Amino acid sequence: MTLAHKTLPERPAPAPAAGTPKRGRRTGRSLPLHVVLITVGAVMAVPLLYAVLSGFKSTDQLSRNPIGLPDPWVTSNYTDILVSGSFWQLVGSSTLIAVSTTVLVVAVSALAAFSFARFAFRGRELLFTLFTMGLMFPFAVAALPLFLLLRSLGLLDNPLGVILPQAAFGLPMTIIILRGFFREIPGELEEAATLDGCGPFGFFWRVLLPMARPALGTVSVLAVVTSWNNFFLPLLVFTESTWWTIPIGVQQFQGQYAADTARVFAYLVLAMVPALAFYSLAERQLVGGLAAGATKG
Amino acid sequence: MTSTFLPDRRTGPGAAAPPPPAAGADRGRARRRAVHWLTAVGFQIPALILFMVLVLLPILFALYAAFFRWGGFGMPSDYIGTENFSRLFADPVFLGDLWRCLLLVVLSLALQLPFALAMAVLLNQRMRGRAVYRMLFFAPYVLSEAITGVLFSMIFAPGDGLADQVLGSIGLGGVGGEWFADPSMVMATLFLVMTWKYFGFHMMLYLAGLQSIPKELNEAALIDGANAWQRLRSVTLPLLAPTLRISVFLSVIGAIQLFDLVWVITQGGPDHHSETMAVTLFQFGFKRYQVGYASAISVVMFGISLVFALAYQRFVLRRDLQGATTTMRGGGT
Image 1 (cartoon, helix red, strand yellow):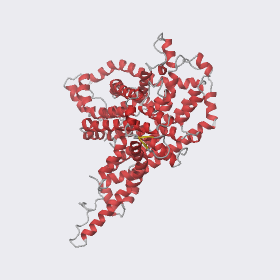
Image 2 (spheres, chains in turn yellow, brown):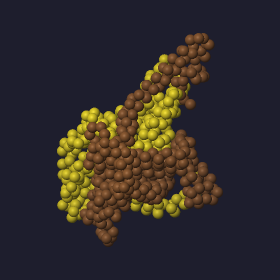
Image 3 (cartoon, one colour):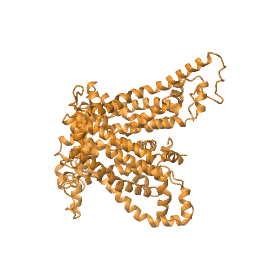
Image 4 (tube, chains in turn cyan, purple):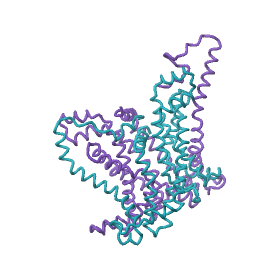
């Protein structure tokens, strides 16, 4: 699985064999094929485009002209949100929480995965089963007691109250993916490192981690996206707006400006931009990581 | 086998010479073993602490609290046996949750996953714009459920929303209606939104599986005179089976824990007609402070997930384990 991100979509299919029958079939079939894909593509894209365009209308204009292009183009919905501090506050806390969660979960999982992959020790299978079982538990099962625990630890309305549980629930998947990758690294390297005087931690730090950079990238991207989109946990933990993340902010904004539809659309669009931009940058890691996680999980 | 931190079993060039049969050797070996074990477990400790305290402990505590009448303050003390559970299974809302969960599973398996598979098969061919389609179909998956929910609650707003406007403009005004506000339509509309958001994820899994099927197999079938349908049925689908089974698994687990979308769009309404187990749990646990009762809901959710996961692994996934890993590795190099 560790090479999964390389097998994924970008790999061009090998050129069709020189035979002509294939080509003839392709042109014959391609028209209905494209009709289907364009239709599905339209259904996928229209909600997003509709939101973008609606954001450029006034709410009054939107109710008179819901489908057409904006006339005139109103930019104030977008600019008002961008100059208000509250939107950037959401972006800031979402970023802080996503980055901290990722650093924590990847660091802790890498240590554990190293031990699972490169040591034989009593209790290893039991421990590993314990972690993999974590994949099966819906978060909601733990939500109530977790909330009470965080409350008694004084971690409500504290970013750690989201970061720590997110990292804990991210452990199973991250450990499984990293363990698979660490196992692929040849044992000879380890012997060489040991002969050169590296202890286990030295090998982990100086040899394994640098070699595992692609896998670390994959699990980091997964952790960032999961944290960025998390809704349930911040909803429980953040009762005050100080640390609200983007998903909470969007829901609150809709409640607050329900009557001003165009403004809500603009807000939605701006809230989507970071996730979509991140996706376009890290598509390979994300898709590869999901496929790898699914296969291993 | 790459585990080389094995002081006692090491062989080959780096191996230590076998210890001389002296009296102290056994003790030395035992000590080395203990050090080895402590090193291995030492690397696990941060993960273990995090996992125990924030995942296992809460789940175990929910198992305990489910047997109490408890408002969530102090420790539970009013032990009521299985009363929460008998109340739960007599509650039409919770029975409805189970029914709706099953409905979503059936709809996903019957419609969403076949659709995702069809798109994957289409996009597995060489064609113009393939990368764009793939990116577009998968894009909703990276959006947060909260954003998706707000977006579609506005698209399906009765009358003014895009859905009603489009239907009206092509003369189908009567087809639309209350969407999320209509008890008989809310689940269908919700399922549409879920398909919009999630089918691309399953499509990506299938594409990854399809790409690892050796091209030679389909070419051989082609030479043997198999048509496209026969090749799909007899070559592609059997080889894709491990991926399909995992996608089914993820889809069912997703239906069991569905919360975000429902909470943002309908909060379970109208009149509980779109409520899910997680929403009911949230209502009782965080809105009405019946924490013992809500814990019973989480225990049932836990039980359903566990039984399903174990049964699925026992009867369906087991034979795949080998296949799945080689499948993923196959096309990579």
